[in-house]
Image 1 (cartoon, helix red, strand yellow):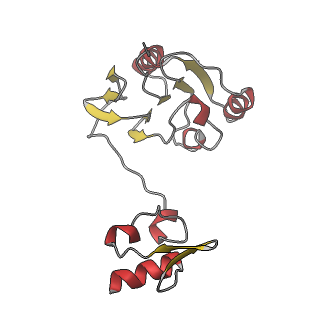
Image 2 (cartoon, one colour; image 1 turned 90 degrees about the horizontal axis):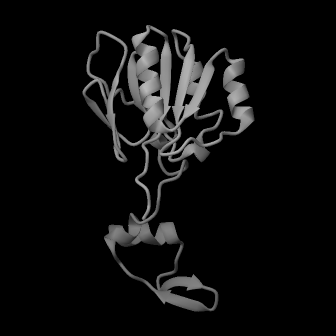
Length: 180
């Protein structure tokens, strides 16, 4: 009975079923029906809170990218699945799915860091992609030089700059395998 009450309140249906125009759909009392919607900001107080997951074991130097694949990266022996942001002293998951998702908002974490990042290396996947010039201008106005490359070259560039002692960060999107 409790599951039925929940469904009735969520769907705002009558005791006979859900009204859809002139049709009435039969009522199905299923517990899974009550959980079939996605949570939105009004449904869950935790939805609006920002969370941060540090994915790095303790490190005594600047991070190095050991390998990459279409699934993610190996940074200092830590496996990171999906896009990531690599910066001293943290490895973070980066909430982008392609180069099209790189915006001023997605780059905000790089210019808010202390110590101030000198160079940001962006790996855009299997190919070097052209980013919106206003986005590049935005990050340059924050005093950060930007290198946009395909992910394999971005990993190498990041490792080289980090080994020189430069304060470098990387935003990396895993390269997707070619479609045949």
